[in-house]
Image (cartoon, rainbow, N blue to C red; front, side, top):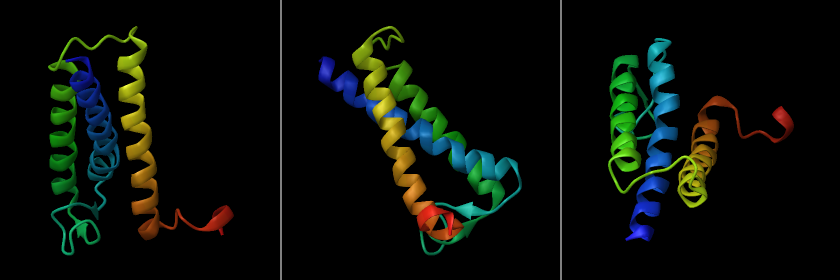
Length: 109
């Protein structure tokens, strides 16, 4: 059963990481890409939609990390799975959103 817990922590980390750009953009009152825009993931959604989407990601991340198994901050395999999910989702978001916000140009040019 341990591998299922680790898989849950990995995806929990991915959902928690995905919370940040949506929730922060929404709180700043800025439109941002979301799955509900047209076209999905490319068009802009309102700040309210992004706060809702970010909050939903937070709730899902919470359930995947805190309600599956017995997550331990001192258990290396648990923290590694969570951190890997956060890291990989962070890279995916940087690559995807960078196309729209200038983050993919080499050496900042």
